[in-house]
Length: 524
Figure 1 (cartoon, rainbow, N blue to C red):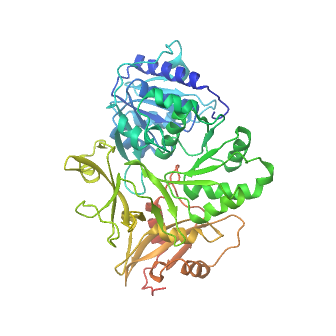
Figure 2 (tube, one colour):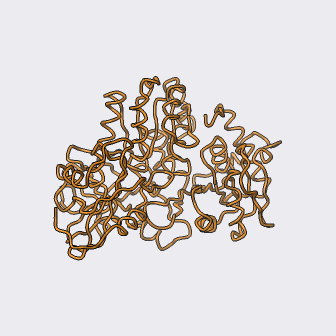
């Protein structure tokens, strides 16, 4: 269910098959790359499944991108086809002239008249979405030709740098990102096992997705809920009050968000409107792509139910689902031991448990083949060692005596202040525990004495008493060593994040640097 449209599994399957046949008729061939340039909709799910049915590689497109960014993504991904919402068609057409491989564009009508009509270049053949489906067979296309080696690409913007296309084999994606169709036990290795498990699942099981499907975590959850036979409620765009209404009306059991950026507005709306809705069906709050702070977890348990299960998923577009994060009383993020997840040193050797050495989280087994069109970054992130392919993630960590992994944060954002290493995530967790803080990003800014100093940009909760900078620093002292306390704290009406809720550290660093006077700053 999305935006008022409801489809049974059978209707979804048949429409996806018809669209697959229509794309083949439009000249799209197995192995081609087709961009999905849409906000959340039933058509998005149909198009995604249609591509997989005809052995075409679906490519997620960030609908917030500018023309320059779209041109980069369209060309870097070698798109030959496009399924695009009518509201984005003009922008797609503007850059299509510089994308010589693009030859077909299927436009999804949203029922609204766009401000600008698309003007497609001569080498691109446009067609309407329903027109593409019309008259096509509803039998599965290419059912006998599909392979475990078919490709799936997830473009990730990450927190820094240009977007990169992570190339997965279907089998590896199923096993790593979707846990083999079973997050609670051994993988299901046949369609018959999957069907039997879905049939045995609790009746009325309902899953709600609030994040954009073009984000990896949302697509992982979409596939997982489809494989489990759940009723799936998809928000076209996230709006907290609408989310509460849907939980009530659709009897949602699990809701998926992306970190505090979505969870805090939802919690504030819940506090203001709790009595208006029956939310007793909700028993799981899950987050993917960003970690829920300990303070927001406690707030949801207070507002909903003490036994609310919170799943703080840890993973990446480059590795799939690596486990669940627990945040201890010491504020540190911990990941349970996993035979496929290690912490490695600079020589890519596993760091033994109990060592105080800091390393990088890495995953082996079912991992991606690499980054599309980028052999240099592929060699760095997905090295093959003794015949085994590894995915080297950007997260720094250490290993405790029992094998538990303490996740410190992204190495690329680590702040070096006078030789001391500070990970932004730990400082952000501390600041988010203050009741007036809605969101925060932390980055290093230049300092004449220490090289860098810790700086924070804070977005306050609407209506909350405005704290002073010293109040926030005093609050941090209860959670952090002195050298980790921000020496620069500034405020912004809103924190810049991606549409999926990921932190935009490039924006934070630029914003904070513009506020920094670079004077020597004493330790806290």
